[in-house]
Image 1 (tube, helix red, strand yellow):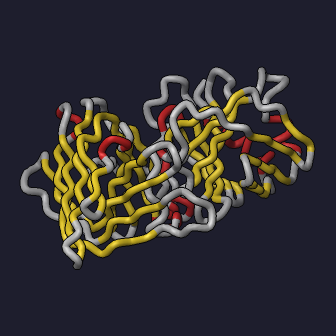
Image 2 (tube, helix red, strand yellow; image 1 turned 60 degrees about the vertical axis):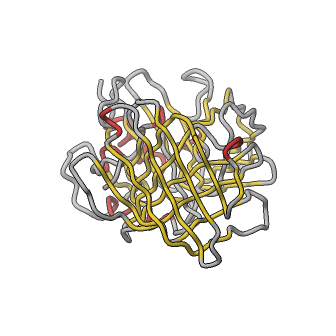
Image 3 (tube, helix red, strand yellow; image 1 turned 90 degrees about the horizontal axis):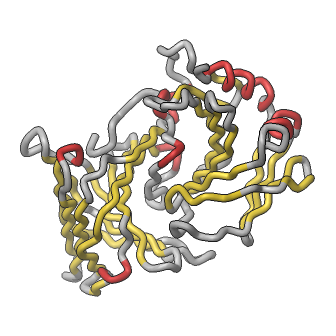
Length: 310
């Protein structure tokens, strides 16, 4: 499945570097996984106009259960997102992959302005990112003759990925540490040196709350929102409330354009006590508000800590 490595729920999210995809084209319920790569965006052309100067240094691949896949980059600092979307195609050789491009999606990141989609004909080609630096090249043309081009050169680092396959909630568990408590689903993180586990709960079709704990007694809250287009190192003004009472957030870190991590204080000042005892969590950032039903959070948290390796 492209550069995304298909895994079980045990790799439901590498919290230290979660990837995120283009939820604009399809509902989050169809999104199986996402992989991100860093490097240089060498060229980005939209309908004949050159946007290369503002193209981001991260490219994200999204994989959907429908067979659709896409490559996403951000443009500039205003939240603009571009996705070259199509279906995964042939493999010319074991280390090469092709993808069609039947639409190019533009999201300006402006509240109230829906994304636009241009029907195109074209393809993407890329090679195995584990073999070192490689080029992702996408070319397409619309029915008016407008040209679309994305050329991204990776820096040789391995993909950072997450599995958001919703079918993991219903399929039988093959790992005794995997668990389901009501709407919460959790499992160990593959290859986490701190023996961490992650549990997730879908908030709506765009938003997922992810709770991470590890053997060093870390307890972190993470939000994935497919509509975000956050800038790296952005200074975010955010509030967190448990049952209407504001909790002082120690720090908010942007993991990638669609994922943030909230940090509390030490053990006594951390999120866990209120997370377990409250019925509702509210996260506010600017004019956006995310409300999470915490039903079952106490039992789910106990399972989460049982999952964590000592």
